[in-house]
Image (cartoon, rainbow, N blue to C red; front, side, top):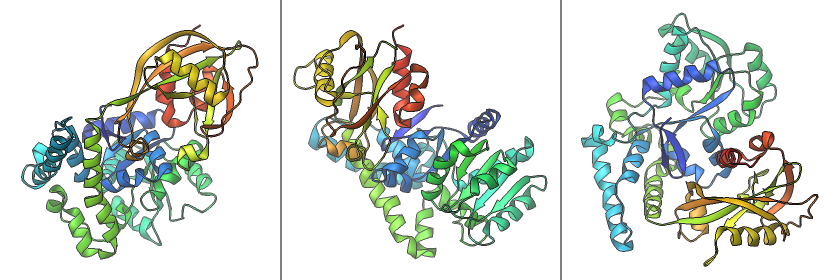
Length: 422
């Protein structure tokens, strides 16, 4: 699937037909998969809520929910300049250029991401798909009789729709997974509120006997008639936020995050695109049993995350080459002075940072490009962790490496395995 990266998060560039085809493929795979409808608020939250960022980075599909995502995709794809002052001025003016396109040239705004797929649109698409292909749906969340009213609304439009479960519940309630699994729905729609529902799905995904799980935020409330839905013409020109502000003034903070804060973050992120990538090297240490050394980042180095397992890595300093950097980093962080380097792969993995990590390096780099050093090490080497970077280590077999690595490290892990020596 084609993707566009916005504020460090991959958004799948899917048309409606492509999304339904992907949903059908996912459900046929008989393995629980998460889909997230990503809006501007989500991308703002992901800059500081690191657990939520993990959810967005590890979900199987991220759709563009809202005109803000389409605006950001077009804005960030426009040319930028390396000259600091000129780049800042041009990037600032482009905010207004693409902002005017939201209202006056919506087709032009869709030149990067073709369609926005909001929760309100998606629930009707899924209901129609479920009827056509005999799939079942479970509605979880919404307070009081909300989910029951949503079910009635969907059944009125699609009398043959199979809704196998309706339950309000809350993210803290025990027994929800068992309740859902007894019904074994193809599609689980969760309305615990934005962010909380995505975290709940991610946390319980491996235990759920469903095909596809999606958080739908306030969609249940709109369908149940408990909140007014913005007129279609306002939704199409990207002024849904203004309607919500008038009808739901208590959402002021959310509107501020979704509009001015999001625009500022996009501007800051665009300036980073003119910056170079930080060159780094990751060392794949292989013992005589052909197991690979992986390490767990300390809590302070993972922004509050836990169990973040990765291969050791570090940046190249001054005029170092990859081999010198690998020996220095492994010596400093793991206390291992001796290992035999077999070969290296230069600049095989490149990725952009979120604003948090860019700020960590004083906005000097837009992201990181990784090389790999493959090295052999003797039997039972003494490992002395420096406890600043890592607080634990383990040896992983190649067959279990991707399972042991943190989800956001698995794409890189697959590259490591592809070139692993026999």
